[in-house]
Amino acid sequence: MATEERTKEILGELKKAVYDFEEDDSVKWAKTALDEGVDPFVATMDGLASGMIEAGEAYNRKEYFVPELLMCADALYAGLDILKPAIEASGRVAEVKGSIVLGVVEGDVHDIGKNLVKMMFEVAGWNVYDLGKDVPLDKFVEEQLRTDSDVVGLSALMTTSMLAMPVAIEKIRAKNPKVRIILGGAPINPEVAEKYGADGYAKTAGTAVDEAIRLLKMLKEEELGK
Ligand code: B1M
Picture (cartoon, rainbow, N blue to C red):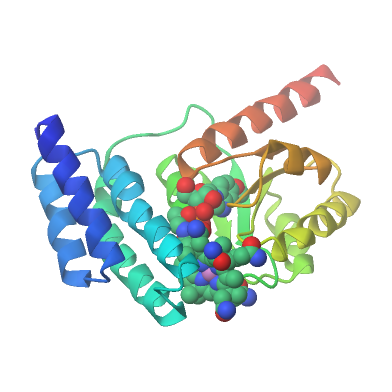
C-alpha cells in the first residue's frame, strides 16, 4: 500500500504523463499505481483526468492547441486501458441497477468525460447504451424508446452545445414523459439543469451513478404509489 506521499507522487506522475502527452509514461505510472495499491478510480480522476484539465488551462493560455489536446487525450486513454479492469474489479456494484442511454449532444465532440461516466455505470452493473459524441437529438429519443431505458444522460462541454439540451429534453419527454433525464459536463450546474427541465445533474463521473439511482428510486416509488 503506497504511503500518502507516494500516492501523491504517483498521481502527480499520471497527471504529468497526460499533460506531456507521454503515452508510455501514462501506462507505466498506471501500472505502478496498481502495483502499489493506489485506488484505480482515484488514479483515473485525480491523476489522468486532472492532467487533461491542466491541458485545458494550457489551451486557454494559448500554449497548447487542438493537436496537443488530442495527444493528451491519447495518453489519458492509454493509462485508462490499464486502470479500467481494476476499477471494474473493485466491486463498486450499485444497490439499484437500471439502464441508461448516454451521449454527447449534437455539435460537441468532447467525449472523454462521457466515457468516464459510461465506465462508472458499467462498473456499477447498469446497461449502458452509448450513442457516442455529436449525437443528433432525435437519436436520444429513438434509442430510449428502442431500449426502454429508465434514464437518459446528456453530456455537453461547450456553452454553445449545451443549448441543445433543453431541446433534447423536450423531444424525449414528448415521446415518454416518464423517463428520467440527467445532465452533466463542465458548463452545467444544478441551476442550469433545473432551468432546462432535467430531473438530475451530476458534477463528476463519480457522482453520476448515485444521481441516476436517486432518480430511478423516485420513479419506482411513483409507480408503486399509483
Ligand atoms: Co475543446 N473546448 N474544443 N477539445 N476542450 C473545451 C471544452 C473549452 C472549454 C476549452 C477552452 O476554451 N478553454 C472550449 C469550449 C468553450 C465553450 O464553452 N464555448 C473548447 C473548444 C472551444 C473547442 C473547439 C471549438 C476548438 C477548436 O476547434 N477551435 C473544438 C470543438 C469541436 C466541437 O466539439 N464541435 C474543440 C476540440 C477539442 C479536442 C477534440 C481537441 C479535445 C476533445 C477530445 C475528446 O474529447 N475526445 C478537446 C479538449 C480535450 C478540451 C478540454 C481541454 C478538456 C475537456 C476534457 O476532456 N476534460 C476543454 C477545457 C476544459 O474542460 N477545461 C475544452 C476532462 C474530462 C474528464 O472532464 O469532460 O468536464 P469533463 O467531464 C467530467 C465532468 O464534466 C462530468 O464527468 C466528467 C468526469 O468527472 N461529466 C458528466 C461530463 N459529462 C457528464 C455527463 C453526466 C454526468 C457527469 O451525466 C450524463
